[in-house]
Image: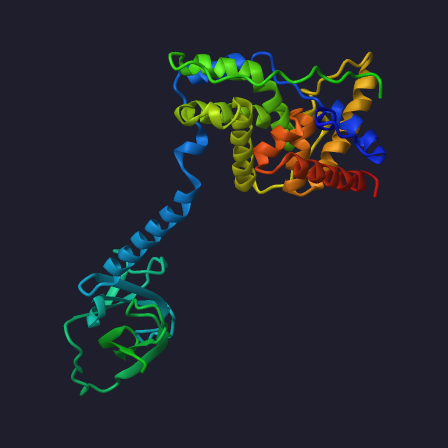
Amino acid sequence: MPEIKNGNQTPENLKKLERLLRLARFHPRASFQAELLGRVRRGEKPAGSRWPSFLYGRMAAVLAGFAAVLGLILLQPGRRITVDRCCFDLDGGGIADDGASISGIGQRGPFHISVYEDRDGSGDLTAADIVRFERTGSPELAQLASPGIARIQHCCQDFDGEGPADDGIFVLVTPPDRVHTAAIYQLR
Amino acid sequence: MSYCTADSPAAPPGNRPKPEQTAEAACRLWYEEHGEALYRYLRFHLPTADSAEDLTAEVFLRAIQAFDRFNPSLGSSRAWLFRIAHNALRDYERQTRRRTLVSLADLRDLECNAASPEERLLLEEEIAGLLAAFGELSARDREIIGLSYASNLSLIEAGAVLGISATAARTRLWRALNRLRKVLSP
């Protein structure tokens, strides 16, 4: 006991507790030493040395850096993104079963728009769907001479893949199933 | 509580194994001299015998890895090993961050010379209560009690592990015991 070795007496009120503490004696399994020596013989390394604790913070910083670089790569101009939004009434048929698939390159804006009827109910453009309208290139207004043309707009969604739901889609249709043109716009 | 006996005094501090000795021989020597005391110290802080064995092994593996850095002129191998155990225990507690729970089923490694299973059960209940109260203490209090009673270190040795004088270790120990007594009998 520490107080005996150092010539100090334990206070009287602590002696009972001290006696109880002396009884709490644990003993490892008899085979534990042999197991430990076997681990040493095999050259096993301590778990703590494999990954020093101070490296956790550094590794987190490195991973955050990688994530930031990856994010920049994904968002850099020139990377093609496709946004598919469904389902609205975009052909004038009265049923909200149409979608728009918009492709763009970085921040240059959409360059390809497909308006489709979601026949298979998948919620996005698939081979089973009917593409009502497809357009590539810069925005243009179609000839609006034909009678019976209706204008449909849906706002606001994220159609350009930038994140905020500040974009709208504008279509000119002849109900119930003819789409003349479509355009994507951003609210400013 | 006369049904169980206290253990024999701790083994005398050993010396560093000679350079030509292998890591296994060094480990064997250190374990024979200090292994049980280290195990008891760790077991006081850990909820199960398995976790105490794991951490005891970790201490010896760390010691073998740091064998070249051990300088006997700066202190005994016993104090050095207990410092490694102290650090390993802190690492473990940082990783687990959980409160120590004690159940009777976990006391299979308790030394006891009880004459009957009933007496053994009574002792286990009492020790389980003690360790549960011990777990309520701060890490600082648990350290000094564990070093002094579980490992049977002198106050000088316990002070060396904690980096304080023997007098400061004694004061800290008595304060910790008083707090433990209050937890046991509020």
